[in-house]
Length: 110
Image 1: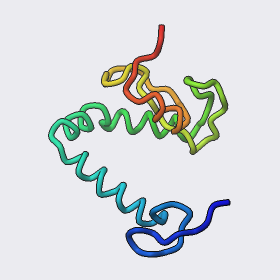
Image 2 (image 1 turned 90 degrees about the vertical axis):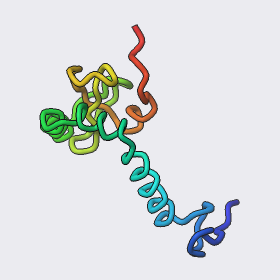
Image 3 (image 1 turned 120 degrees about the horizontal axis):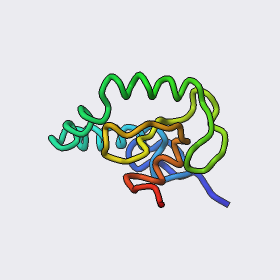
């Protein structure tokens, strides 16, 4: 049986070491630091241009079949992913956010 314990940042009772709000705030700070590096800025500018954003929105709005696990992705819930990581010319496909994050920057087998 798990018990609530105080958050290490704010003291609110939570099942984990940090409450959800403090955890999200810490993630935002980490993401801002990571996104401030010159390499990350360049990558975001080349991979995530206006064409990518337009295509990604269409894929998310339509939903479809996750190309990584083969399950249905409900409209408005998936993510668009480059089939070949780090290639701005690579086609996009719909995927679950968990599948996309699990794959990371690895190439597809085969």
